Amino acid sequence: EASHANLKSKRNMKELRLPQGVETVSVFGRGKLYVPSDVKVIREWHGEKCKEFHFESPTPPEMEYKPKNCTIYIPKGSTTAYFAKFGETNKYIEE
Image 1 (cartoon, rainbow, N blue to C red):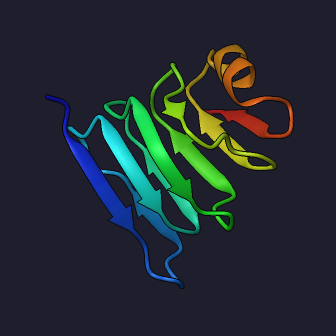
Image 2: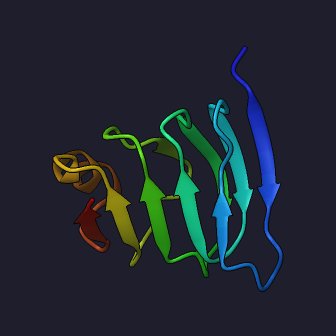
C-alpha cells in the first residue's frame, strides 16, 4: 500500500518540504512547497498563500485542487506536461 502523509506548516513558515518515499500527501501550508518525485498524488492542498511550487518529477502529480496564479519550478523539458495538467494561469520555470 502506498504511504500517505498529512503535513501542516506553521503560519509563518516560509517553506514546506515533502518527505521522500511518500506517494500520497495532504498538505496544509503556506510559503514554498517542495515536492519530491516520489509524490504521485496531492489529495488536499489548503494553501492559498502557497504561491511557489518546486516539483522534482517531469510528470506532474495528481492534485485535487489545481494551483492557480502560482510560480511552478519544474525539471527541464517538462513545461508541456505541467501546462496541460495545471493550465495557463501559472508561471512555469524550468530548472
